[in-house]
Length: 227
Image 1 (cartoon, rainbow, N blue to C red):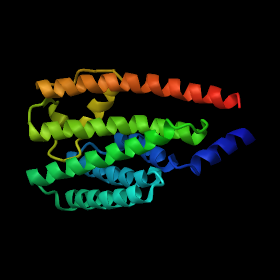
Image 2: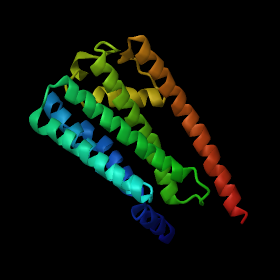
Image 3: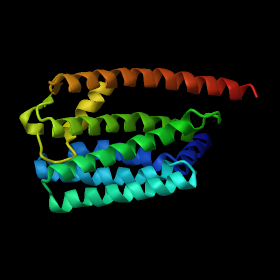
Image 4: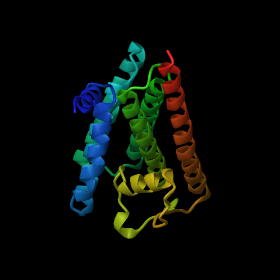
């Protein structure tokens, strides 16, 4: 029991705990949200802002990069809050909002992976970072798909009950993770060539990520167990 408590304490005080718990909480709570589209879109937007702020804790200790990410997160926070409060329908505003969000999540993903793949020993916090990076990868691709559908309507064939004018489409999150994990239920399908190509790329990235990550963590564990 003491071992379990020590592992739990290590995870809670680690860099990646808040982000991981925020993401897991989102996936646990969203299915319980009423199906009314407006309320569902607002819930996705709120969770997006929470995850966005949680990402700041995992940023590298490089001061200059951290300040840049704080500024970028504030920009995303303003854009996300405006979307929630004003329900703006401006195409250019949505495009810039998606672009800033994509850049932010990509930089956070790179920051996480720089720690996960470094030479430091494998700890519970590093494992939490690995899980966070994998889930964040799915979120990054969901933003890419939302951007595709926004710029080129018809890029995806989406069931009517999942269609939305919101920037944060839950259909994209659903499609992204079924593609990343190669489940591919087929209820949402990429229709245009660019969307099809990127869906293939995500499926390949999901498999390569897991293979490389597991190999790296096992190698690090073997190296440090010998020292």
